[in-house]
Image 1: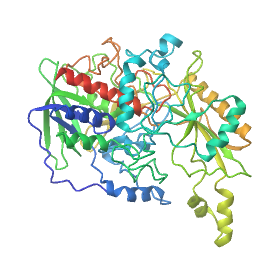
Image 2: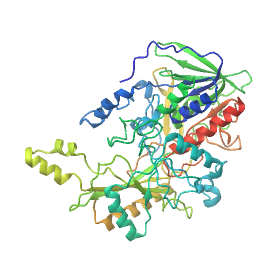
Image 3: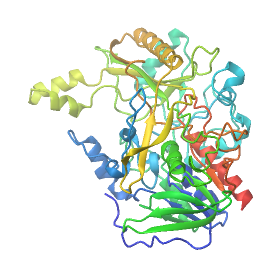
Image 4: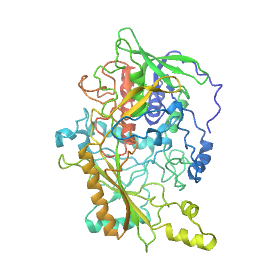
Length: 536
């Protein structure tokens, strides 16, 4: 449960240099970087500060059969939303509001985008080009791997060039990885390790992974990175971090050129305005555009920083493609590892405009938990044990993340018909899939079927174009660009419309590739901090 912090002083800080909205990975990194440089930093977050000591209870909540209580307390009027698009988007199925943000429950895989991702339109005529290239972000990627603490073997032949090995050695391949490796070798598919933001050895004062296996949604040991590390680092250097203070709107000066304050509410029902010289919104791909749209004014009737009309537009997510089954006569030792240790990027770069990117993953957590088998069984004693042994431990599965191209009609907008706990319109997720994405999911399924067939598996299920769902990677709603009419922020991550307002995180993504986005979020956040410091 959350700490009782009702008596904390939540009045504004005088003469703050920077006000950051959001204490997830983006906001935490920006805060730590700027506080370490001596700037007076204030961070405002809508959710609570969770006690580390409560993680065992949260793990039990996750594991206990029949429990329906959200692990990280998401839900209720605070987190209300609607979804009016062609495809329903279950926003609250996988998000966290609180200090640490989505990294409290993420799986922890961290890859760099490929070079082609930054010049997708130039190379394939699909999507758009970023206004920066891989070389621009490369030093920030190296910094991000150090900041997050990444374990990896640097053995991926398809990955972009890197300047040094990963900070920690990779986790060894799982037993089922070895089974997949033999099948892939026969098919000419090259496999390699997965970079993970979890400690394979002691790192920066934190212990190595101890194998709880519940990485998603909770790591009780703290061996997996979460943004509370950077929040605490920021606080150690003088930053002030306020929890449970949802920002209601941003206000600007008479000229409409600078943000002057962030208006926030407290648990006691008070409303205050935090002033600062620079403002950074780091509230994710959904709440960031929502806050800008809620901050409309006479100068910005369609929402703050929205002269282009693109705030909330080009919402993207990765789609899941998967297939699995059993090896009846072979143990696969699934569920022994709570994260992926082997993947392949062989099918990532696009050789034409026929399909988007595919990142293939060999899953370590297929099939039921032993407890699930026991609860569904009608037997007892030795018969129950035999039933568990028969049903558990023979499963295998291959997953994939599939790229979704930016489409203007996919968006986050306000729904005035539904309001949150403070009477504000909730976010409405308008989301659909295009035919190219469907073809790519089908292609991923074809590859997965070949691998499982070569392995000798009895295929029992698959997730394809008709039953696919999101990976819950919210990207692209305040896109980056050089033309103010076609983008929201410039290559320095500052909004075109306001000289002291920056956006950190995944919202500035122009395209999303098929890589888990957190390492790119971290890299862009370090870049944001550098540019804010230049202006200060």
